[in-house]
Length: 193
Image 1 (cartoon, helix red, strand yellow):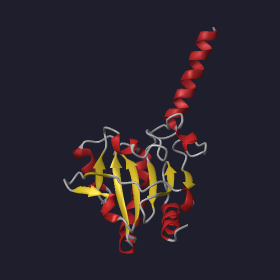
Image 2: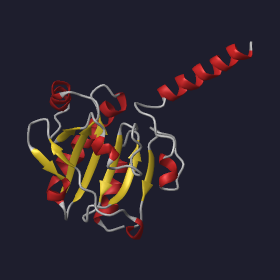
Image 3: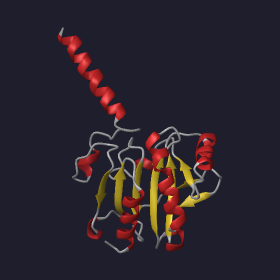
Image 4: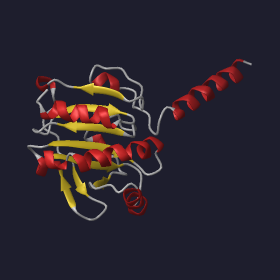
């Protein structure tokens, strides 16, 4: 009887975790920055300039075949967003990301998608459907996201990271991000806050 109860609890817990979002955080991710959080809940974390990481460089080949490196955008604010086509929160936040990329391009704001699951066909179809104006790189191996260890939990998709003009992590959102939240984080990064 106890074994059946334990199995039921495990099943309920597993179902709850699966419904929490497209991805789940690795067990120690919250400890790395001293903040506990539940993956996918839209938790926002900002770092003061004195507490920011060394500059981060993310690079790879876009689905269109172009080489992309955040180092080329040094001096501007960069937004990194992990996603994949079958992720419902990723699809829900796509219009906000497209709007920001379009509306803020003249301000020196660059977006880069990091696709964690899809082959080129699915990724390009998503980009066409949502009219995504910014590049995305493929990261099915997880190497790019692993390079953001301590900032982005390995399995937390979607996640959004804002890099300041020096390329340092200024903020992150684990889970779906709203347009107003992301605009505020970009404004803070641009102001040096």
